Amino acid sequence: MKFEFELPIVTFGLRERRKNNATVAGTVPVEIEVEECDLVDLLPVADVDFSPSPTNPTGFKCLNGDLYVPLSPCDTLPRTVAPYSSDADGYLFGKVARMVRTSLDNARSGRQLSRSDMGYHQNREKHLEPLEDMKLVSYDKRNVSMQIAAFRERCDRLLVCEGIVHLRVAEPAIGVDVVYEEEARRLSIRPVWRSSTGIRKAAGDPLPPHALFRLDDEQGLRDFCLAAGASEERLANWNSGRVRIVDATRLQIDSTRLSVFAAAARIVRQGWGKQWLGDDPVIDGIFEIVDNHTDTDFPDRLGELLSEAVVLHKAGTTVFRNEVEAEATKYVVDMWEARDVELSMGIEGSRSMRP
Image (cartoon, rainbow, N blue to C red):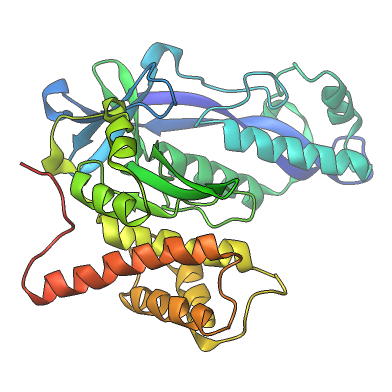
């Protein structure tokens, strides 16, 4: 199915009757062909409610091994956006709008905006003018082509089924955090929406949970929580109604491997640039693997390094910012070592309640 968009872009160009180049913002037409499928081919996998109080669960469906969630009816899918408008968010144009706003704001502060765009900046609800109507003598075509290519790449994750646009997403998980408050320990257990690129590692992103479990891995979740000191009552109070599994055979993530990467990513995120972080090849190895891999594609060496990091911290080289982090990571290491034993006995896959 074809969609025609007016993509907001920002570039450097020279307007007619102007002497100097300036930052200009406009739109360019982009036609996207989106894959279609029949309703019978899009198979239900799970309904997950990510809010603390179950309200409107997100339905995950599967096509050819990929998971999709509903994004928008075809007839209401946004075709463009005014970067400063109140509705300049969402999957298709949120990142684009932020990029245009940042570029215009930076150019304005540096007095590199054309008069037309300076006026646009003050009238924030105004939609951008098509680039072809702006009477530019020249502009950075390569830069515009790169912005169009990035938008096309985002659209590659779209799928149309029965008049609804769906978005390809990563498999969600159950996250567990070990928290100490007023000398008391508690566990935070909740569904986690994973980024399409896996656990995020940027400085401004939230920390990953201490451990992550596949939606159907009830036994693995239970074992971790009991090891962390959770009571049977607490586990009974976990609102499993927030996750309803329709077809567990479509779930693919490995709880132990995902938890290992999450624990390692926490070391990197919390220790980056900090004076308290120790100096040791083990720590360097963790940083190198986390920086260059994703949570579903990393060498087994990371699990070994994490185990060595726990021993290293106990011996006096600071790896974790506090003992809560060290203790929670030890529980993940126990999972990893138990997995090694299972694999050596010929038992494959993480523990689960699959039928």
